[in-house]
Image (cartoon, rainbow, N blue to C red):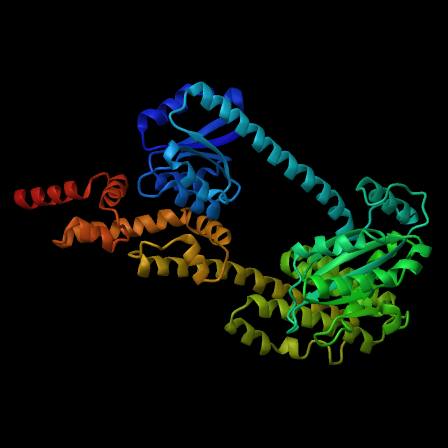
Length: 533
């Protein structure tokens, strides 16, 4: 059942649409109605409808402007315009704003119902297409990304490879377990002539268009890189791999006018070796220098002995993840297991310290990214950090110190995130306080000023205050207006403009809705009270 908001300033037509259309039978449910564009926008933000059915000529905010603002706060909401014949070309200006249908007035309820059924079919297709594509991508990414990035697998230790092959078949990456495939991981970084990384998720398609000419593949965007798993027989890799990477570099330079750096892993026989291959490809691409295109094979850059470095990177990534989002118990459990492994591996104190220095750097990097100056200064002065490992002490003492350090970092990051949320809300309220008289003030404008996305700021405001941005802005404007009405002799038109409203009638409408009285009625009430007093 799709949800709908109906907006039209003609109350009789609006009520007729709501009452006479059998919404439920055609798969819709009306969740709100609005008599002007501002009300419609508020309802879209609060009710989050799948469809907005609106007249194109609306008081206060036009249909075109409403469509633009709806796209900003609720981009998944589809829009149907009701318009007169002479407004049709005007309506077409909003084609980029999720306009799914135009309906010409006057329209009978039977014709409206038929059109809504067509709209329902269009939304069904959109949902189905997105769902199918999302499901397909999800099934593959749920297997592929952990396989390469985390080295995960499920199943008994003895049949690890069988379990991975089964999952690869289920996700559509492999068609059969009977093959002679090998695997190579390719990491692609695309940069400008100035050396600035400009790799984006949109470029995955470009990379895939080259890969498909030579081998089976699966690609995804991750952390400023395009990661590709290449699947082919040994003979195919021998024949095509060097041609493939050459094609990639030349195509990106010739067509996209950009530079390309490639990191290429060794060939591995098993899926269970793909995570190590990913680490190899990442290590290989790190050898790229300058702004020129380049291809780096890990086999050319390093000898095969790289297990310690790879394992260290795995551990660093896991600790970073736990510091950001793990529970206290999860951190302690992982540290217990980590130090148990260090002990079993019989690493020298120097090697253990080398690993732990990398972990300290990773934790400090996260702290620097989220903490404020005072907390960073506190961390720098922390004697425990300065003397964490390079002193006499037993193995268990080293474990205890590092575990405590990680727990303190986790607590500091958590508290800083909460503090940051409050700070952003306070900044928003400060901007509303100082700029409520600006008729152009909006959620998008404020989010741009404080460098966060509109959707993030909207959710943050709702969580912290229980109100929407529009609620807060309207409340401040109405309180300011109330003060001016009570304490000054300014004309209502002047008060309207000082509170950010260019339309006096709209201001009066909002004021009455907020306070229960029109501006004139409030002043008359005050005069009456003074007279009787």
